[in-house]
Length: 303
Image (cartoon, rainbow, N blue to C red; front, top):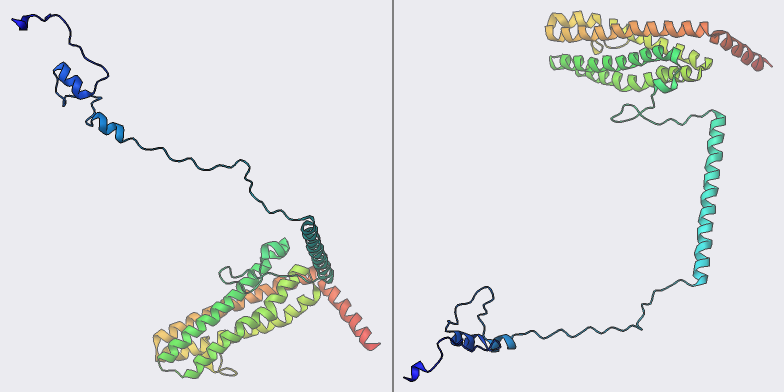
């Protein structure tokens, strides 16, 4: 009957500070229940698994960082060195300016190579350096110079085909010589003098152009005909060699006729250029100026 002595309505006494196992036994629940805050470790394990705090780093408030500073003597020495360099740069700048002024007074123009754009070898800028009323003449003269290069280059091709078809090797070597000597010679002898004459409007340079350009026209007309007089006839693609090789090989004859067309067009354009330049030369009074200069030179020579 002792089982009925206890109060059935009394609550179980549970110590809230007891461990999880005791609470489970007191409340009649299993240790493996848990929830969101369930801890699988025992109270003793959690007490022994705490990490010990790190020892604090030593910090000395009185410690200082030594930053090397230049002394006053070093600063004065560096200042003097900078002043000396600045004076040297000023001296060089003034010397360069004096040289540029002397070159400008002497009429010397420093020309930068800009043509052809891929591999510049000459200076050429008609749009900026040639007066507007002479640009058309200069452009056509430039076209004749390029036409001469194209004519001599095609001459090499045609003569090479003729050599392959049975002609002698000597004509091929002559065609190479014409190209190697003709291109730079034409630039130096008549195109460059004309460029400088139109840029500076110099009567002396115009007179030199007329003499050298006349030789150029004679060569173009001679190459268009190509008589076997001075040069070996088949080394130039003129009209006479074209008819001669046409009987032996039609393809070689066609190449020679094309070369004849190149030299013919070059001759006609060159004649037009020299006419236009001569008309400007006379109309601008350069002819009278050249005669006066020639008379003065003859007088000085006589005296």
